[in-house]
Image (tube, rainbow, N blue to C red):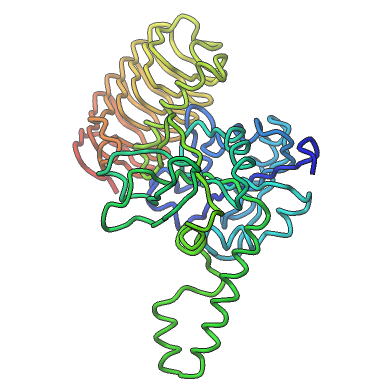
Length: 415
């Protein structure tokens, strides 16, 4: 096939509600993939990166959220970026490879030559066009985006060993107990359609084993206890590990930023990374916007056009202000995310925190934390519709939705 005729599709795995517990209380009413980073939904950054791919014909979001939760977003992002975005709802969790296989007919409707697969809970610069070119040179079934991390943190991810010259994946293991390599899987892949045949082989093998063990009721019971459902196929353990060392998998290493968004605190760190990237990709999104032209802006800041920031306020660095936010005189915002319809009254301070939708901060109040992104209470989080009264201080605390705070709190989870 001539390269000009090749078609590319992208699949973004968005998981489902049962996977959102780590993001509470921010995921109570908003799916985690739609939580805003640098003023845009988390998956918006993925889709924007996919838009840069040549001959992109479709982006699929696959998960088991209710379709209504993604319908409006899919429509709006399709119109904004002018690329078809379609949400496909699973009836149950099927594993990353199982999800891909379950919707293989829809994914292959346009007969694409290459399929990108991205996990939603990662933040990086997504060098997808470079990955695609490298993949074509390698000639295998798949190419993984990889990055080098510290030996101490590598065990939290899929570690792999690659040939330094050919870039072939020689060995792959998911979250090993002993150190294997500081080269890890970033959760971004490009495959040829042959990947569906590989997944199908895993299905058939599982079904054969289940059938054989069915001959003994005791063995069948033991098999069910220690085995996965036949239609649940994991990309890492069931596909990548067996393909390693067979000249089918290759790597494309990034030296740019990469993070996995495991906690709400990481969303503040990742928002900062995207804001910094806007300097070169979307400078029009940074700095002063309508309604706050005279406010003091420090570093990278996003302000929604509908927000109103008083000229005496000081915001930044790393501040993201969403729609219809009202910032009063003397307010100081630093390293924080302020969500839709929030009101922050005179001389309030927000540092290392997330302020939930429709919340209100009183005069001279403070919402702050020490800024440890990985710690449970390393940032302060106000859920939706929280009221912090005048002069109340919230430090290293999480407040669930619809609470009124009239007393200061420190290192507490307010239920």
